[in-house]
Image 1: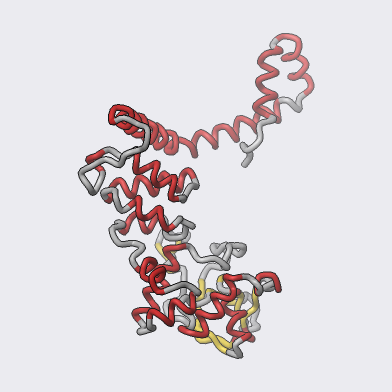
Image 2 (image 1 turned 60 degrees about the vertical axis):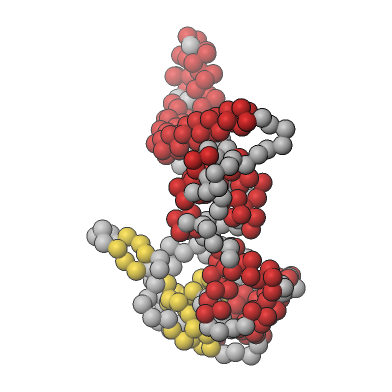
Length: 299
């Protein structure tokens, strides 16, 4: 359950304790589902899924601040649109207590692979047959079973880190060859680099030392000797260590740079200072201008 900090320092629940059954007519969408989206394969999958096994993940709404009694739809536009097409008039929703803390423009027409995995498990727990779920998702039963086993051998901490990321399914095959602590490190690196492909996961596996592997043997890369692989492992370990050190100080360094840029920009708007620097310290003036003109360092 999502939580947020109150001004007094306590923890507030991000959703009301109980879900509510609402009339779809009382729910105000934040955007219209376009005809192009309705023609997409993903939309067809959602239609089939809801028709076969119903709503697994409730839409998220927040109460309107006026006295109309209506609700704003924060998440679940496609699901609600499908329900309308199927002739439904009501839907069970989660009610968010903080509309400003919810990203209105998040993409809701695509499930992250771990979210899909959890949705399938919920459907199975409710007694839906495998064939029925597979038909709803437009996949075969063997693919469905692969999705069910997605997190086998993946530690909960790594799964939590990747839960809302669009990770390639074959990346998990590489992660489960690592011990839990290395899985967490690999997941953090994937997030930091914004790379969630199977090939990147294989590269991380190849750079993993033997003591961090589940199996006793190290994965081989074609064309490399054992000595070259050992060297790559050491270099990768050093690179990861340096990366984490840089990541820890990034926020402070970026803030310092933003403040410095703002100060220098203000300084360079003073013609007397610019004239003095141009006459006596042209090199310094040039460097000041480079910093003031830097992109990507604004507040």
